[in-house]
Image: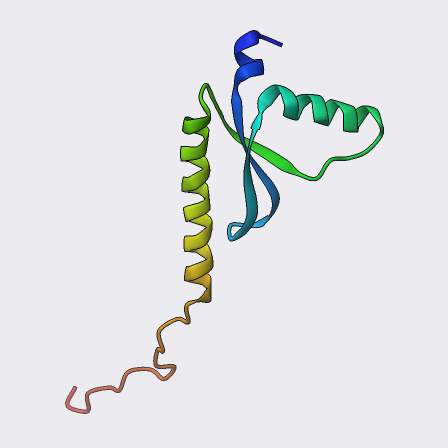
Length: 97
């Protein structure tokens, strides 16, 4: 593994169930890969996770993580807000036509 990659910070989405249900974490890329190789070698399937970004600095990784968290919160809010009441009956016709 290259030295630059081993020092990289990974933004990881875990426990993804929907656009409003997931967790976001920051991990060293090398540590995440080592952990996954260990689990795979031991015959265990790790929980589904998705690397959504690799960054040179932890600050850059956290910036993306915060954007993902804001997106998740926005989706939760939108899906919890009741839709505006709409009329289920068709509009009345103008009898003069």
